[in-house]
Length: 473
Image (cartoon, rainbow, N blue to C red; front, side, top):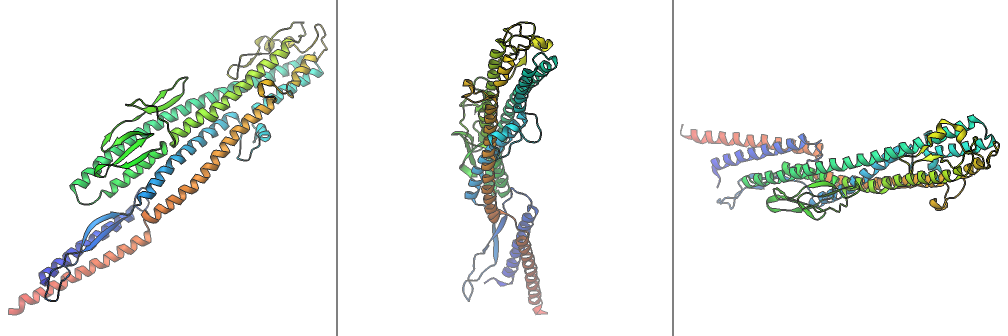
């Protein structure tokens, strides 16, 4: 049987157990706004029984562990979905930048024809093309007018400047996306090193002490999810509570060691991709912001720049072919209207820019009032061109803009769906691991009342001991 001293020991251990419960509840309350924290619970078990004349007798209770309430299945799902969301957010950002570079505001319902017109009053390339061909039409009504000729050259110069600016902006966007890839690779390497360090700290803590290093495990899971948002990762359980990390089949973290890291490299033609640093193996990334940035850069953004360049190149060729066959007010012929070979360097011929009389608007030499070439130049606006698959210049540009709009709309839709999935998973995690203020306050009160009762038990036993001691008096 316990006896008075055994009961006193029971009360003492009960005090310690209830105090531990208060501490755990307080720790939970302190982390109520910490998104990486998984709530903890004190695991209390009945102490071993002792024999007594009435049978086995209980000796109270002991706190045996602090248990972390976390679902590994939900954690794996959240880690996996983080890569999907990271990729979509990176693509969305890149396409929004490209949209801004075009000077077009596109929504998810934009049609090809409407897209070419833009929204918000921005003067787009479509407007510049229309202005140029309208100026050719106006010139045809008064081919001898120096004012009309000057208007044509000014509209052409404005359009050329728009092409130049669009190409420059899209080139700069490519550079920005390259820098974004490099920055994300640096962040990923930092996280890989952090995970390896935490593996070491967790193994050391759990080896030297009883129980799990719950707070360190929370921090490691947070880093794994941050890494997954940058690049899709495969996580597996290692020895001594470690997490091993692989990316695209390459082991990056093994136990407490960083087995490899990421680096960017030029795959040719300035295309920046990612590979394993030590192994030198190019990585086929399938998720995360790094993959999303590369996908948008080499897909929609590169295609947009190529289409704009092709449009400018054909415009130069077609306008020059018609203009070269015409005659100027001075009788000259054979001169080019545009110089350059694409959107990066298209410009109005310098001789025309300084002398509008050299603009070759007539179809017959010496006929100052003839407007055949000016009309032919104006008709280019409505003609289908073989180099554009039978489309007009405006139609091709509308298709280019609509393609960008459709890509952005698709990403926006996917991202919206992904946010619903993420919200559901986070809700499931919160139901398991989230801290409830009401629940923790209830636990706090329960442990506090139990602590008071345990103290009362000790006082009662002390009074009983005092009575026994004083029996001989």
